[in-house]
Image (cartoon, rainbow, N blue to C red; front, side, top):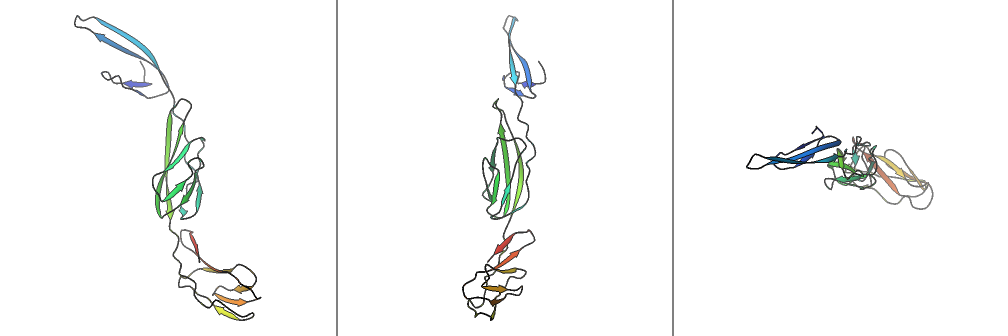
Length: 193
């Protein structure tokens, strides 16, 4: 009897359009032209109102994003293996370069469900050539390390040696040191060798 729902006149299939109640009437006319009817009241429950998914940014393979929605209590899903997402947390981890469609769905206490989606881009890590050069040096002496991948940053993990921006390593004290070479690409994704 109103715009809260539509119904198939022959099928009886009712589709909710807006929250509220609707009175449904079913009538039958026999071969003598006599009619009879019955009515019932149907409640149309509102859908959950979801906000836009926030925290959406490109992510590197191996890195994470924290996705969220203003309506809590929902479930997160993803459409492929380019990323993984915590079904309850919304924490997304990039797995392979590409894009993934993220869906967030909420079911309210009336059993009505609603969802919203977004697309996340997963960027590949840069390919970095291995470090070459000698693996031993005397205290006070130098060796030059190199990688055929340009544009990286050299570092060491302790004070047994120092290394400059050109890969020249100087021994400081006896012991071992780990040398790292980090390259960051235009997508701000970093590979360390």
